Image 1 (spheres, rainbow, N blue to C red):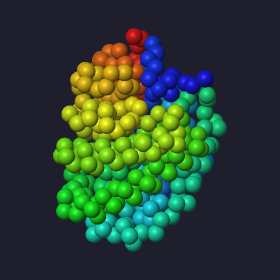
Image 2 (tube, rainbow, N blue to C red):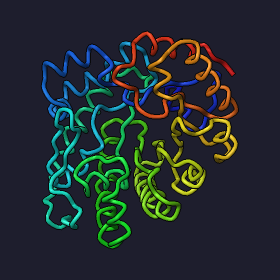
Image 3 (cartoon, rainbow, N blue to C red):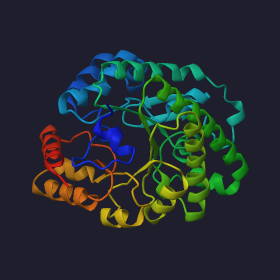
Image 4 (tube, rainbow, N blue to C red):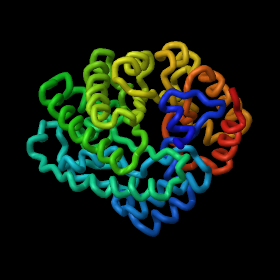
Length: 341
């Protein structure tokens, strides 16, 4: 019997709301910090399939979330495409060589770098209760490409946006290559046991409307169509962070089954403007979860009430912060689970 999260993503509206949190497997948990200290760096954890499975399951054991999100990273795709990937303390991820000069042709793909991720999915699914949903994920092409071009994260994606304007053919080749690998990657996760998958477009908000159509909507639509051709029953969640007023077009045109919304979106506006009956995921501000108190309850209830008439997965507007107190997460769970339509 599918759990409440999977049922909701398939368009069913239940009295209760499922809940999981982006980055729920991570640094705010003492058990994660302990394991990371024992095992070493972030990438070492991702590729230690026993450790990655354990980290994926930690928040399920502690909180009983309705979904387990795979412990991995969106940059596994460029890593499999042949870029070198390092996570440096205090600096974040670094990819080399940078593709700002269109060095895509010089990369030598290493597809076997995806195989351990599938093994982690299999291990988690074998240990997960039947009523909990196994969630896989990948980065969307625009967001992944911003790291591939610049070699690191940036606040305004200057290098990548400039390349997309200056040489759209070369940039389009990078996007097309990411699409191809991402389709295989998501299908591999599904075949290993993922019951739903999410596409993270974390930097979608940096694009103009025309560029958003070209580099966000079109590539995500291509991925959704290809994955659906092979796995038509697997729900796909699209999360175009920062998309603002472009969100309804994304929801209509990409073919995703559910849309995630960030904390800058008015939930009442989203409930009114998004396609009728489409499942929505979100969108509590992660800083409210950090702060706690009465305002956390008030705002959580406001989100729940806004989406009372459509399928809704409760989540944050982005990932949970590393300094979030455990009691605040417990408070949020009590509020969400105590709410009924």
